[in-house]
Image (cartoon, one colour):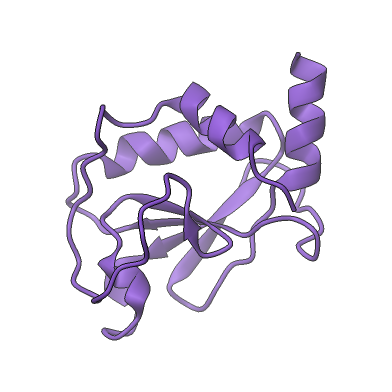
Length: 132
């Protein structure tokens, strides 16, 4: 199972850091971004779930040497629609990992996950469903 999981993650996960509002976090080598999805962690300081979800995402990606771009929503242009996703949110190729629809306005808020904050194992399962 571990070998299969590492293979899946090794072929699927990567990051494309976008703009000056992002910081790239890498848990290992950077993979080919032409065939692998872009992973963005959207956040702003002060939301209670942000530190824990970031920790879970780092742990999930550590197994695959994957990486993500941390996007501080407060540093994005005020019209950037990504500001409308609640903090924290994980986007894969611009789509919410948990299927939240794209926001209709750039109003920032803290995000509450129905059923509780997704843990590392939940993130691993969701990320393994991604196809390049």
